[in-house]
Length: 185
Image (cartoon, rainbow, N blue to C red; front, side, top):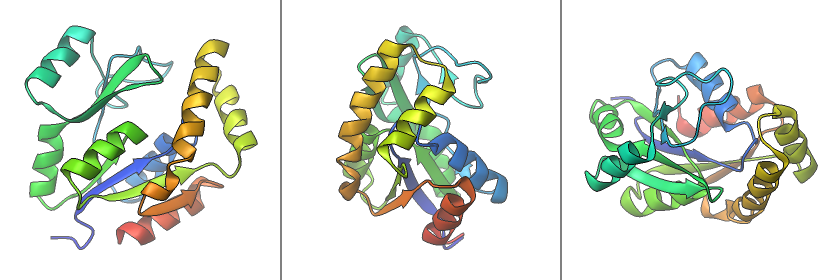
């Protein structure tokens, strides 16, 4: 079993680059398992079902909740629901595979209660202005959705002290270097 085996929660505000950082980590260390979250939101351009997210409707999500099929779940930005499939995570942890959960603050708090041994990492922006620039630069959200996400981001940034490690995502390579060091890969 790898010394790095275990669950690692990676969280942070919208547009901070969590997905980009996790993809770069996975590219460097292919053995790492990255849990694919279930969501009720529609795919963004370029997102592939089963790769980036498992896109489901409300009825399927309700069934997963009712059947205790999610390790954690939350309504994010007041609109769509996201969750972590329990079975896939449990299987990889049982195999001794380092397992990454890229989830929001609500989910991270739930995991802290149900899996206190999981290490929690908060990815922070270099500055508020940079976070706003990154969100606007994505060009995937309406002005109303951007404002909702930025309000949520303010709340999430205020909670960074709840995490075991905070890493400012100035550059993807440096952020991945710090993650690798913290996880012990």
